[in-house]
Structures are given as C-alpha cells and as structure tokens.
Image (cartoon, rainbow, N blue to C red; front, top):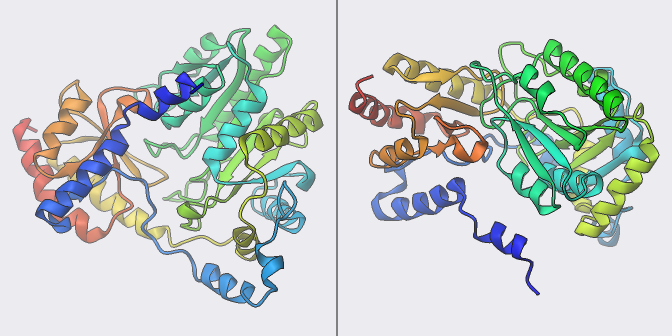
Length: 393
C-alpha cells in the first residue's frame, strides 16, 4: 500500500518549487534576461580550483579503487582530516569514529530524526526555518514545535524555555540562518544550552541538539559562527560542503556526534542504523576523496558579500524594511502588506520571483536568494522600484 504520509508530502505545494517552474516558463516566453529569479539558493560562485585539481589527480587512480565502495561511514582518512580541521579552526574535538559521511545536510537531518525521534515526540525549530524540517519531522511521526523569533529575528529564548516539554526529544539550530541570514551569537548559544541542560534535568532524559551548518563559512563583516560543541554536550553537527565549496549537486557532508555526549556510542549506532534504513550507505566515493584534498578551502564568498551590500543598500533606500544578513546568501524583506503570498504574486507582475515566508514558519516576509549575478541584481532594481511605488514606499 502506498504511504499516505509520503503521498501527501509528494503532492504538497512548495512555493520554491512552484516559483522555479513558473520562472522556467517565463524565461522561455520572454527571455531569461527579463526575469529576475531570486527563488533558489543555488550557489553561483565557482568551486575553488582545488576541486577540479583534485578530480584530475584522482582520475589517475585505479578505477575500481576510485569508484568502489568505501566503508559505510566514509573514508577513515577523510574523517580524520575533518576532525583535525575542526580542531585547528574551532578548537573543537571530534572523534573520527563518531562521524558519518553523508549525502548532504538534508540527508543528515533525515537520519537524525529517524534515529532519535519516536512517533508523538516533539522537535523544536526556531522560526524562520528550512521548510523540510517539518517534512522530515512529520515523516517519522514527530511533532514540530515552532518557536517565534524576536523582532530582529534572533530566537526568543523565553518562548523557547516555555516550549520545552517532557515530550521534547530534539532541537534544531541553524546558523547562519536560511532564510534570514541571521547569525547566532555565542551569548545566545550559551543561554540556549543552559536552558536545555535545565530541561534535561527536569524531565530526566536527554534532549539532543542538531546544529544544521551548511552556511558555516558564509559570514561577512568579521562575524564568526561559534561552534555548538563548546556549549552543549548532547550536540550533533550536520554539515554540508554544498555552500562552502559550491558543490550543491554533489551531495556530500558529514554528521559528527560530540565526544562529550552521554551514551554517544549508542547514539552513533542509532544514526548509522537510521542511515542504513534510509539507504544512505557509502556517500559518493569520488567526492569523499575530493573533499579530503580540499579540507579547509572555500569558494570566493566575497562575491556574495558584494551582492548583499548592493541589494540591501538599494532596497532599503527604496523604502523596503530588510533584515541585515550577517551570513548565508539570503535577504529577508518585510512585505508592505500582511499577506506575503499576495505580495509575492504582485511581484511576479514585475517578473520578480520572491519566496513568501509562510513556508519558513513565519508570515510577513519574502526571501531573496542573492546567489545570482551582480548584473541581474542591477537589472532588477527598476522592477523593485516600481513595486515599491505601488505600495507608496
């Protein structure tokens, strides 16, 4: 019998997916240069030279070795290299034997939820959040509990403390944030950890935290992303190289269980079992070897910073209310009318494709992915200006 839950997810509407389809049609009808597509968070900066250099070098290996299975958890040498890089850059200790190489951060989240959440248990996410958090949680029978943000889109930790219950099993933290670009401070993470520790003591069971970090290196203006391992022992890192190395289509990243986690061996065994149950056994062999040769490298993220400055400064001058993004490559803009979907539809009349924030667990905003060309941003500004004038900004 077909799973009704999965059927529902497959048929559920996604604004991003609908905008992508609409954008493709409009580009075919009127030309790509007349459509201003800010809908998709697809890196537009080339991968660093080390990626192609590594691929060319690896092609000299025996084909069966290059393309054969690795261990299920990934190459031991890659896991050791990642642990050493985290030690150097963040003074964070990782155990290579509690790491699992995964097919992207989304796969990592799916694995964590399947391993750690039982039907009826609760998962807490801070709005705004990546829409798949809800799908992954509900897909294992869990209940997603949304914590609203403060006015600056930092998490409301008082509301978080009240949202914790005996049924809370897992909390997801995403910094830099998709869709807002907000970066959480060390002070915020410290208080969040203390709240979680008190809840664990109160309810008598572990509450796990998954730190969702695909945008870790995409920060600007001297900001730093604190490592969650320093604040909370029951942490699992979920990382992807899709943004830092501009490799979104290669689906490669890792899960890492904190060496300080209580019963960390048991949790790691549950993660590996969930990965096997999901079919995530042996991430792509070629890309594992590429990543090992590119540890510590990043794409040229300064291009995103320039795009951010151009778009943020231009829109605020027009009268739009924008959240200043310290990281990622998204601009979150408050809509001049309460209905973000209606505003997004109106923007389409100017060939502006903007994602309404409702799917991110928060109304009243649109997300603009500025991982586009500077030239497209410049061409789109008259359209933004005309839209602003319609609202009297």
